[in-house]
Length: 174
Ligand SMILES: Cc1cc2nc3c(=O)[nH]c(=O)nc-3n(C[C@H](O)[C@H](O)[C@H](O)COP(=O)(O)O)c2cc1C
Image (cartoon, rainbow, N blue to C red; front, top):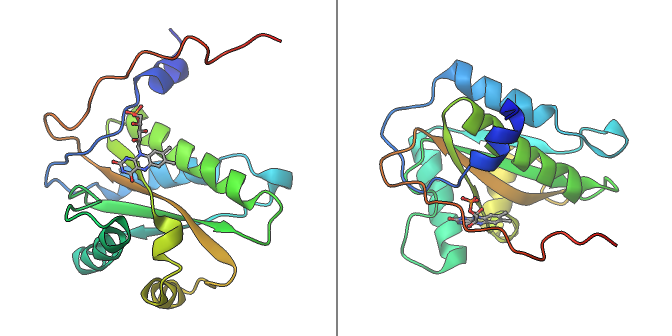
């Protein structure tokens, strides 16, 4: 089968990572794939903030955990988190940012990294602490929304589950 189609079929969410850091070259490949996602009118409206620093990861996972309300590390110990921010002022800001997330996860899989979309980005950056973090990053919290968080790392054993069968009525021909 075509390599791209195989990657699409075989990418799965990873929820357990080894301690091995993601090397800069691999990280840049994944991020570049994010920047090549299609965007409405080619506006390249999303922003990506890459976090690898352990203290910042702790701060951000604690904020996400607070929104989630479960005492579990929502980033599953991944060494990298990419915060994809959608531009509220762009007509297709949300859609653009979703496609960036998709590209990041597929690119990660294509080079042997694990990834997972982590939710609650919107809510965590609406909190005063979240707004302050965005300002620290130089991103206007009144303009950008936390659309999704793509965690990345080297998959640990047992971190990836099998895909469920696809729904029979997923596709309809009208
Ligand atoms: C919008 C969205 C939000 C998600 N949020 C989370 C999340 O917060 N935590 C998590 O472990 N997985 C999350 N996931 C991953 C899904 O649970 C996962 O994609 C789904 O179970 C299908 O599994 P697969 O990715 O292995 O195909 C999210 C996925 C999407 C698309």
